[in-house]
Each structure stands twice: as C-alpha cells, then as structure tokens.
Image (cartoon, rainbow, N blue to C red; front, side, top):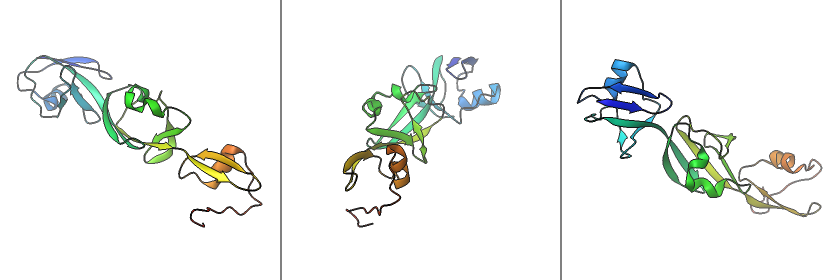
Length: 169
C-alpha cells in the first residue's frame, strides 16, 4: 500500500497489508517517536502497531497541552504556529502571557512554530496597587518578582519597604 507521510519527512513509502509504523521504521529507517501520527482523512491517531490496510496519507503532529486560563489539549501538525490554534486566539495580547510550563522565561507568541510536543501555561495579568508615594496601579503577571516589576516599569524602590497588604509579607 502507498503511504504518504507529511512534513517534515515528506516521503512516500510502500507497505504490504498488515504493515505498521514499526514496519516502516524497520524497512525505511523513519522514526515516529517524536510525533503524534494522524490519518489525514479520518483524524484517527495511529500507534506504532496500527495496521495499514489501504493507501493512506499520514500527518505528523505534536501535542500542545494548555493549562492556566485555558485547560485543553490539542494535536497540531508539525511546523504549524501556536496562533493556528483558534482557541488560543483571545490570549495573544498584552493582558496574557503564554509560556513554557517548565520554564516561565520561555515566552511563546502566536508566531511560535510547533516542532515538538509542548506544555504551555496561559496566565492573565493581575492588578498590583502601589501606594504612597507612587500611587499607581500596574498590571503584572502572577509570580513576577519585585525586581522584575521594577525593571518592567522602570521603578526605583530601593529606599522603600514593600509589603503585600493581602498577606502582610
């Protein structure tokens, strides 16, 4: 059977009835360990042992696990952009930050290409009120440190004692 495999491999291989992704890996050396393999026509996910019984087109995908302001999981084609996930559309603005769940310093944009399975966090900014002498309200991300806030807003707080009124810390 003719098996067309999408990007990044972009190859056509042939397998006998009863062949599997394992067969393709053994006979052609293509590995599928880093992908979620999907039947392009039906959307069914293939495992390494799913039997191929007809000509088929396979799409190589990755999973995007989202937590925070949105909790969901998506399967997206290799090299698609995070902005292609329509459910994330409302988060691509200054009110939210989308970042790598295991490294908050790795911030993603809607132009970020998905080239591996990833776990992302969507976080909404919160109001922080600075009293006298600043008398300002600023939107910051939960978990931002005082140093990060000072840097972002170009504040100089070295001569002040900063207390969280909610916790007393």
